[in-house]
Image 1: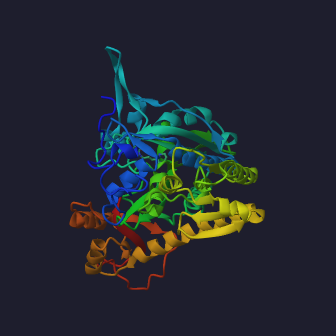
Image 2: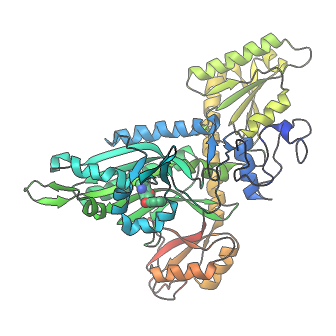
Length: 514
Ligand code: 87F
């Protein structure tokens, strides 16, 4: 059923303007979104990622085509992550996509909860496989039998591997492009150390890398913290995460995770080494991942009613040059000025392109590149050429300024930095405005109804978290802990847990989440 409906929302737009010429479209351009970010956030998101040419819906539910515009962002992130983890002496590897049932079951204690999400290959052609083969939902069980084989003595440690790959989790709840898809791309790091101290150190180093990627590249503010016992990876010792927040939906979103696995997997897979004294010891392990989910978080945080808004550092095109061929203009001169501008910018490493298509009007091009979120638009008209200048429009705040051609490179560089910085600051202000510190259950319920990111004193007991989940269950999902921030505000003596009334042990972020 090629071109089937997949799980596209009922009134999601076609990216081709001609296919849906009616409702809510700007008359002049034929572009535009039919939903607003405030009006219907879910539909808005779906339209933005399709009309912005990031994804195309596919005829298998929960699976999406990542178009070049999305992949250009992913590639930029990959280059950065790769460079950073190379500095940490982590080596690249690639393990197979398939896992045998035997090996998968080794992990059965905690795999049980995940079992419904594991996809299986049961047939080749017309014949049933003798033993079905699973598709990796994550690669602990794929890799660790070989860790056991490759690690013999302390000289084999640390073993630090990373792979870039796809994973499949057959999710059943509401699929959302990038945020919850059945197949996604990620890097997964898997490391083994002789001591817990080394493992602990790496957990926070990786988490700090993830924070920087979010805040300095995606311009999305995050909180670093530790997951509760209930929310941690059940196979590990403890889980740390960076948590983002989407003000428009009032939901937290786990941005990326860095787990200390302790010695749990070492025991399961017998990953032992001989230490300096000749004694046998178990390794300490970590695993950590950063996925294409990050792109969805970035779109949700920055996008507006004109479409995507991309932070300059991750935009595949940072500057789009559009010439304005008014009726009596010297078109050749405009084209040449556009190409010269692009060349000057590209020569210093700025990702610039000119849209010289003759079959689209400038107004259409403006709307098109706004939809795609390009950070800066340079307009070149006959008057600009006469004055040896260009006009630059910012995507983030719509401001326009003229810049002399002689200052082009420096001014554009400065503007890109400014857009990046401003996007982060605006996002942080909006996130901070959603944070609500509460002390009591009544305050909690009010804040939850107001879609706040709730910071509450908590007794850190699993039973209490379960209880909160049960009591807040509703159509929009239950509230749960997001993380206990590493940066803890002062907790005055005698502070009580908002939910149980027992002595509070820490401040924890709570909310609904993706
Ligand atoms: C779904 C099906 C089967 C998550 C699953 O977070 C197993 C799993 O183990 C599963 N969903 N997980 C936890 C993944 C833990 C961990 N793996 C390496 C990470 C980071 C990278």
